[in-house]
Length: 310
Image 1 (cartoon, rainbow, N blue to C red):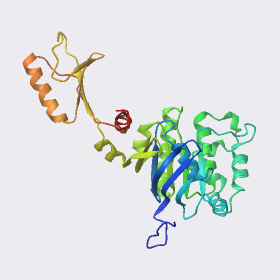
Image 2 (tube, one colour):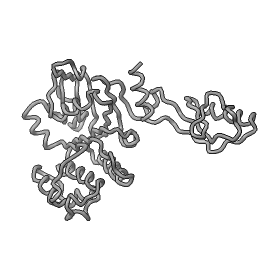
Image 3 (spheres, rainbow, N blue to C red):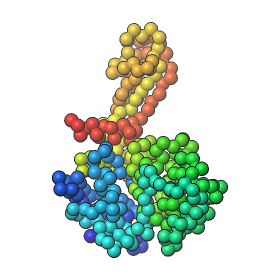
Image 4 (cartoon, rainbow, N blue to C red):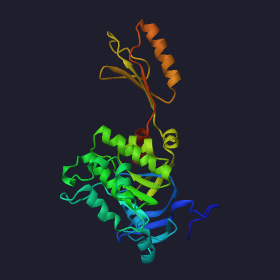
């Protein structure tokens, strides 16, 4: 079923998967899932191990067939051999781990990869984009982990992809490398590239993703923006302050003592802060080191998975 187009004739959804099932012969791994990714957005796909996430991604990429359902990726069906051949020039995939020839230079690796596409980016242009221009003559084996990851992205961007599948882009990298790669991925949105992101770093997902879909046991259990998922989940704000000396177990209502700090979980931070102030006045003590940490996507995700275990 083709995806509808907007007034400019562009596809509204880069991915439009309807009622997708996958059965390996021992029962369904995917149960009539519907997954839609608006064009030009960064969409994160989350799920625990065994949830069906990898199977769905491989179906979308065209590397695995579906049992039933309709699928349109950039207006083409990855399950059709002729469409798949066309899609290979329009999408890119960055795996969590890649194998690059250590004895080749950065420039030679990119030149060879560019030869696979009809209208690739110039090598220096893509190296500028990933901040590796000064390393163009360096051998792959001399690059740091962060530089190698940026080279992975450079290879993916060389063919001017309309859709990028990005798996764990910053795992194991130092903070500066993570920041650079996240900025690069965020910039893809501005260029109109659609990104499907899979990551266990939910801080990264919360920072980058326009929408998040959570899959569990072969079915989607939540979809929305990061803020919407946090708001809808059973996750709480944490109010903490340094434990005053001489408390002898006298804590505010609902509080616990954790590593020398008084901690309270709440869905009404203003009421808790007032209660803590009243408690401090009664105890004739001062509140120091007060912090208020709102619920995060990580909190919401954990709450979703726990709900499924009850």
